[in-house]
Image: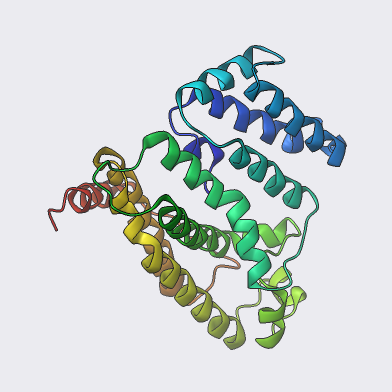
Length: 265
């Protein structure tokens, strides 16, 4: 998934908050983390918002949220997304997966958009912007999962919807053993079509942002679309192969992203 650090943009307090949340569950003492750990973390965030920081890192967060109108619910949603990760939860269907993506990627995008700002000339309501953001972010999150499905499987994780795997005739063991079958190829074609559809449906939100922010989002969109192209080029083998983009292609895509953000093409 997209890094918490990207979502927090240039807000140092958000960066520190995200790193510490990661450390809580994935750090040296992460194996001891439980629901109480995250409940205390949520209370600590509330205390910081209310001007009662626990340490200097919380002071940095308080400074950030004092200067940017960031809804505390976004931090709570990220914490709940972390809770789902910690539970090693399987998703019964795409609706559950979509909700998870709202907790993580959707929240990250909203954090970024709230900090960077909506174009003053935008005529869209905040509700419509946030709805499009949710759809757009879900597309990014799904592509992250498709890119990393083999790596996740080697860690004992499967994020893909159980009901759709069952319908496609794909077992968990097939994924864990890296079997790229015709069933898998057909399943992946459907997932790639869904990911492209989500990005296409939500990408109009880019034009609702401040002009200076659009470049980064356009570039990210184009790079992620190329990840899907790469999976197709590998005959849908994302179980034993991981797609990566070369520096030259990334540089060219960045330039194309700049052009699109400024309406050059």
